[in-house]
Length: 332
Ligand code: TYM
Image (cartoon, rainbow, N blue to C red; front, side):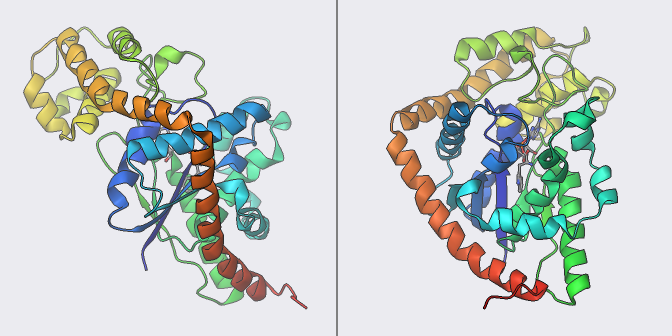
């Protein structure tokens, strides 16, 4: 049976990359698959989080899922720490994954930076927890942005090694679903860097909660080159900032890159940026407004997360038991 699992960290503002690379695709997939969507608070604390802010961000990310169109009745929506199977399975995977595999993870290298000795051990084994998130439900498909591809390859390696070592068919080999025209949204200030929550300059990203004015400002100031738009998509090669804005327009407008380039061929970037701002406001502002409404009623968000955790637990517990039996944990 096909089952989807995916998650977002509650670490500060959600941005256009999270929306176009992940959440928006989930909204479409929810009618085709059984879906489990998670606010991954245990992943968040791999780097320092203020407890009060973590609670607020957890609710805010849940609100963003719902405001974007995730239906918490047909999908399961919960926060990771409420389902203990994630932590329990992660420990088993800590003992399956090899150090050599983790040493290859580029995201650890980026996040730990130069001061690697001072990174948390949690940050290092983060991909094992991510594999546990997915495999605690035997999920088969994982919709993510391109930056998560390497972690999903590790998840496949863990599943295969577990199955091989114990001579079972316990875990499926998961398929990444990397969908749409904006699978890697880049910074508005530097087209060679990913749009990211951790980038110090807020001008580098469009947040889901940005006002219309902020969106206009950020897009107007977005870096471009002096050339007008080319007359075919091949003309965007070696123009990372231009390509990024075209990709964003295509994804937001549900168009192909080619269609966008055909529509704006030869136009200046100031014309294109005005159109992009309008489109971004039209698509994002209703989400921000709905998020604000939802955030007024914390009790309602908490109730959704509680209900989701119960339903998630009901799926994960029997799978965890099966794994524990396979491993040889005695249940006297
Ligand atoms: P996180 O919280 O960094 O990002 C959440 C989702 O947004 C996507 N994304 C992007 N997509 C396109 N362009 C960008 N600039 C961009 N930035 C972020 C990410 O690919 C992701 O899909 N490790 C994960 C969370 C996680 C997870 C999981 C995901 C934990 N367990 C299990 C899937 C399955 C992360 O840090 O995502």
